[in-house]
Image (tube, rainbow, N blue to C red; front, side):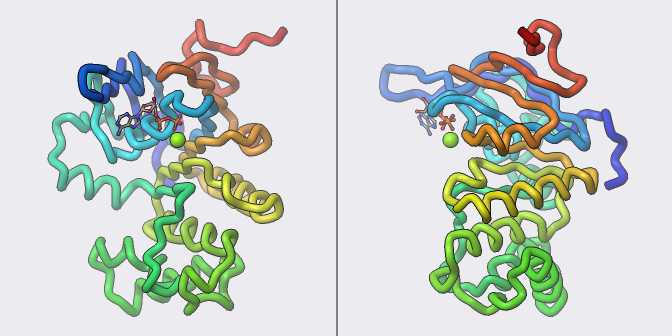
Length: 244
Ligand SMILES: Nc1ncnc2c1ncn2[C@@H]1O[C@H](COP(=O)(O)OP(=O)(O)O)[C@@H](O)[C@H]1O
Ligand SMILES: [Mg+2]
């Protein structure tokens, strides 16, 4: 990863995300300001309903703000077409969701190769790359298995491999260890640590304090806004965690 550390990859400036439910408005994010720099390793912690998934969708350019600005490498997502957003997403971002979203009729290799197909990589090349990544995750003997023929931990590794196959700078994960036994969860966390050492940018939403502890920065959110910010060099002064 050649990008200069300390340059922002993502900036949220006074972002609101508001859902209308009949007459009622739900502010999933309210006046949310956050900067993520190249190479950051951040965890997002907060109670259910606090806006974590909404935030991750915003960071992943899967959604645009109701109000406020989201910038990726300085470019305002409000000024980008949905085609442009999809292209940036495909080039820069890898998603790991709690629900693995694997295609049931495709093998492990084919599932992992899918994002490369969307990018137009030839079949042989993409299946070789997919197999290589799966082997790196200890899945070399499961390449041709369907998702239904894999355990939960193995499916998660397929989902991780798929997130990594386009060599993304930014990895976004929503409760990545939520459905895993502790051994597999440890493997996933170790993989995150390695990705961080390689210079990638990671943002991990988690309920698991141990997973959160691995990150260099921990951002606590509540009711759609930042409550507290632990570690890192970039926390706004008033949100910095003070040791008691
Ligand atoms: N598509 C939607 N329509 C309406 N309300 C939503 C939608 N998505 C999320 N919300 C609401 O926004 C709030 C934040 O949700 P979410 O980001 O999923 O929280 P978390 O991931 O922290 O549990 C919740 O009150 C939720 O009910
Ligand atoms: Mg959620």
